[in-house]
Amino acid sequence: MSDQSAKNGRSEGTKQDRRQALPIPEVAEMLGVSPMTVRRAVDSGEFPHVSVRSKRLVPKAFVEALLAAPRWGAEPQAEVAV
Image (tube, rainbow, N blue to C red; front, side, top):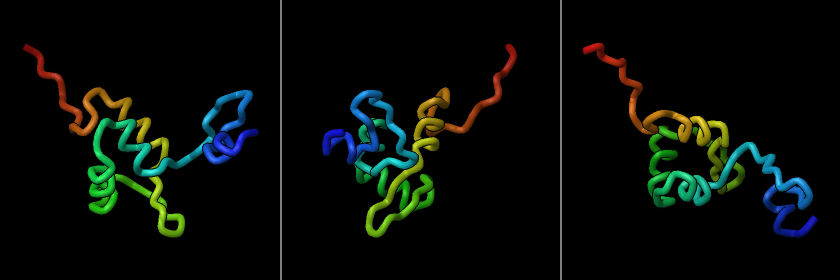
């Protein structure tokens, strides 16, 4: 296993990401926003996080659920029959 793949929690053969939480810069890239936007969401309590020493990590399941939402960032709207 290379140093880089070991850092990412991935084995070279499978390329499977087994991490349960992601660093703020990576979350920002996935969402297409700046890291400062994600930091503010974490600070305000909008995004859950875990702290490991001085590093804050966002749960991967939260980010995936956010991206899977029909209109992420918006409250689900009831459909109106016309």
